[in-house]
Length: 465
Image 1 (spheres, rainbow, N blue to C red):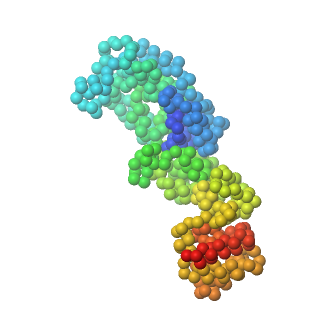
Image 2 (image 1 turned 120 degrees about the vertical axis):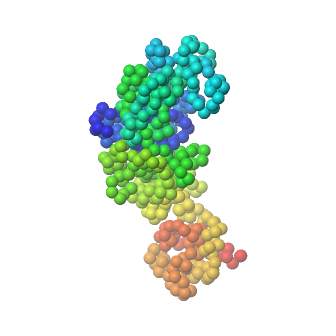
Image 3 (image 1 turned 180 degrees about the vertical axis):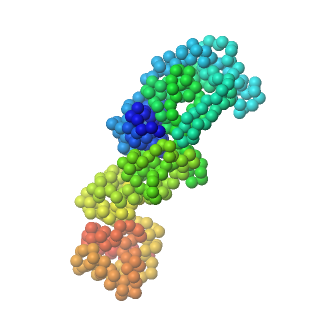
């Protein structure tokens, strides 16, 4: 791909109620391609399907792109396909006048009855019937009977399609509305699109759209059909089966930088033995030609690990701010001053931001949360004796992290236990769980009075069982 500012790439999503991670990857590939070439990213909303034309869904696309870093200053548009209806109608008239399109009243059942093959495409029955427009009559494009259509693809070379094997495809429905194939070709031509980056499932459409470009007097774009994204079973990601909505990942607490970095690796890799790469370096290094054509595995575990790395690298002030929406929906009122002290401890331990609620809830609830599995695990053996000794040791201890640790180490030594075993019942008594923030820092923040009250309550509960 040449580096020239005349490059115009487009991202053209359809409003569907959620923003698919595959669409997000395509948007990022287009964006990176435009930025590293000095070109322009064009955003076009494919809103001609009335059943999926919802302003809320369109706004969702804009919000998702902005979250990934593509605000309004990063692209031209958004344009709306529905606004180009006049141009679509003119293209229909042009193709009819050229004899490149004709009306057809064949049903699918009629085609199967004639061909005897339910898998065979349209048989050209209406090509020379001279039908006029009317109810139940769609408009078909007359594909060439001979020759080949060569698609120039930056990833796949030059796939060749035999024209004789391309059926006469529908470009306008009986109600007059145009199909995806014609609308996209017309819009791309009118908006000066030079490069189209999209999923490989659209490769079969490329020769048809290319024939439309040529029939309408345009020069087809350069294509790049990126690999399909699959799950752990190597099945194509499906919204019916897999977690695919970008909004769901954001709601769970994935940060934009991590998602952006990870999605760029679905088919492409930076130089060297590295995966965590700043966006500025990705843009500098990315070349669409280097994208692999093999299916790309969307590894949620790997994404989660990525996210943890990015969270740990955040300035603590930003980490605190990113956590606030999750704390705002928590079933407790949090004290900002207390959370500011807990945040640095939690930042090293959460993989997604939503985990912050269970990580710090013990500090804001009147009583520690109860988890039966944690209770059974932590309150066994000499737990009652350890709690009694800890309560006594902490009554007059200077309330500082190191002193609290030292006092509990002494309790453990008296019972022949290492610190890990000794602190288990204390952690469950105070925080409600066997795993969480560093214990002694947590005790210092919680305070003497609340710590001793919780240890006493745990002792009473043990005594009653």
